[in-house]
Length: 255
Image (cartoon, rainbow, N blue to C red):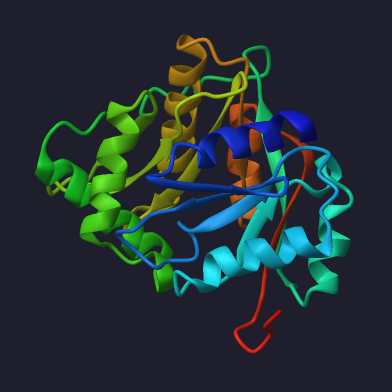
């Protein structure tokens, strides 16, 4: 599964507005923001980069005023992490990823399960982005760029779903990328604090996963942030399959 997830990461980055391919790396840039979470690179499966390849990759970020940063499944390209660390890159995080297939997907049987909807209006997209910003806080605060990204995801073959709050706003939601390499990535599952513990995350996850299977994807994968969220995903049918590594180069490291 590591090769498939890494192949997906490559294909997904190639969808970015600006794409640069250097020495076995694909870098995807979004000129609307300098967020490191939306501007990063990933290696092709099996890449064995040279010092020159890594230096050129760093330059492509530096000349744009961006933090050199990569996200990838390390087992799909074992030579990459050592080469990056030799150039000064440090670990931001290591996340386990979970995978769901049509045979493991489990639909909730609760009679009072939250009703999951697809946003249709500007107000609904904005309410979802605001809810996700409240759920995650920090660098993931709500923004016009976030609203535009959600809409593009839905319009480009992915899926966006939310659960409406009693006041008509948004209690929580998530999005899933358009499929590539026979899989899709589900991300940003968030619930506003006041509405947690009501089955919203599980309902949204199940709806998005089912939507991708209906489009022909053979699997859907995601990363989780803690044991609580992992249990939610496992109840839907997700199972552990590998890890993803996040590396970045501190500003003072120049090569």
